[in-house]
Length: 268
Image (tube, rainbow, N blue to C red; front, side):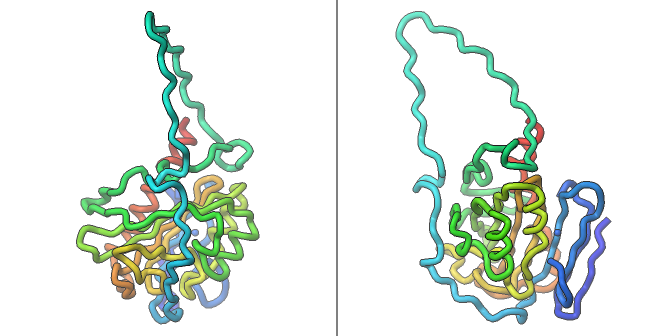
């Protein structure tokens, strides 16, 4: 059941029962948990008049990982001695992982685990990757109240990428904030004010240099200790139309795409 709540400042908040997949305070969109499952979703329209245009400064973006887009080093396979080959031992089946705490989920989240391909097919649309980063310096990834919440709750890093559709009409910055615990992730998901662009930032790219500004559509969900988000903006930096169903759909599709590796850990 999805219930939209319209606000006088032009924002929209939606309370939804996660499948499994929400800022609060007077005068701005609010979302509340919808049941026993702590995972939740918050969808907000960021009004174009809600904040002044934030200049995109190229120096603020630190490209993470290696030039190949992988934040891990290449591994060389061990050479097999000549002669009779020794049968490989059976591979143990993956075990389910409790992703609510980094103590039970110690594996690092690699960029290629979240965004393995330079192109993504979602809902009949093709999106090409324009830029990617792994940010441990959180100033690059968030603004204002959201930035403060990420720091306060001990965010380890933000893995993110910007994609453009083939027509170069929509740009999407999607990412995952890695938190130490599920409690920390839930607090971060409620923090910030997208209407004032005190939220996760749009990441400017080669073909979308003007998306680090207000006027886009924000969506967020929580999986265990991870905060997954998507920010959809016009590729030319112009605000998206309020209530645009395509923009909402694209935001949700990117959330669903980014949670795949997290759900895979849970299943084992």
